Length: 128
Image 1 (tube, rainbow, N blue to C red):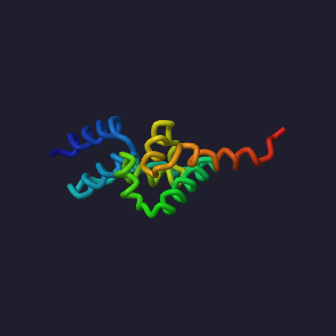
Image 2 (cartoon, rainbow, N blue to C red):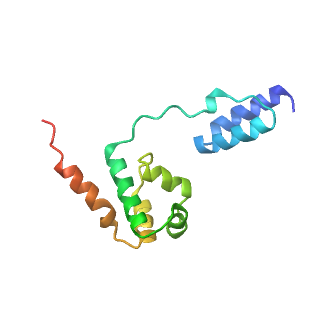
């Protein structure tokens, strides 16, 4: 495959895949002898929102209290291992259905996940 064709394929890949898939595509392209493109490297991330960190810590606490590994919770909840890691580290904002799936996997009520986060947020002073 010529360099021009490879560049065209790379441009198409960049437009059609997410960052996670982009990492895999880079690995494939590097192993195939193509140069690594700096456009596919994810931008440095800012600090996660404190509420997402708190939510992730609560999910991790509940998971560890039950003795589940990330792999086990992923299987029990029907979510991906990587997705759970991102949620536990506050890097992803899970939707309602995801919270319900995690609660089901942990065998808890969704409120057991959310209530400590809501209570923590309520204790913070409001800005005036």
